[in-house]
Image (cartoon, rainbow, N blue to C red):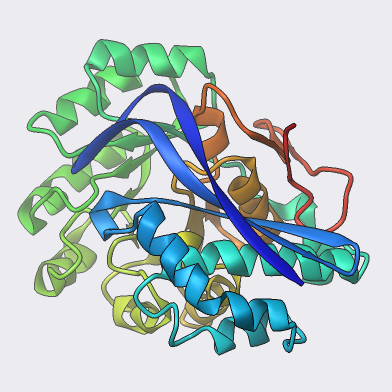
Length: 337
């Protein structure tokens, strides 16, 4: 078994702005596992908000490299458990390794990942397409550039309702709102009625992740369902979100990969909560991995590669009507060139 990793810069079609950051280029770490004639790829983007850099991600992988290459693990789940303490402070790098392990392992088993997990790709929900914060004119232009049945609208400005009202004039698509922790409880409750009238399906993470008292009020009085994102990072957060949110948005990079992500999804379902998996502007490596587990979900946000002006990988093809997987086994995504 051989473990290698390298960095790719992912240029975005448009500056991507949310409530707490903007970026034009997203750097991402690609992990490659080779053994027994099979190659597995995994990915995790860096993220300054969570303190995840190329330097600390690769340093964490370096510490665990000998364990991976010894090959004394029989499944991705076992490898994940072996690395639990090593990756405790760096789940992003564990995600990239875990994803590569699932790709390699299911290829070795001669199955696509969704087949190995006994999932039906025909049940994959339509992904939303994300519109980052910008001038209203630019946000409208982005919608016209990509006609889509569901848009996730990033908010967190001083004029959020006006933005949604203006965007509604230009499309009859479903809207999903993501405030990225920018609102107060009173704002979220007040906005929810108007947003519902404007065709919004749900609000994602309206309050700061630690504002539990505020979320109790929002959960009780909001006229729209609320989905946790920043409040639901790791497995132990799922239970904490029950009774405060109607559903959770699992980000594989933040959770530590597919292995814990699957556990979080199943736990949320057992609690009667809606499930969603979101992306962090990954290339087609990470997005294709999300697509394989998407049959488990009520909602999915896997538009990351669609936001890039140049994708260094090839994998799943996504249209409003269907998701088409690569021909190969495993996750099936590959680097170009």
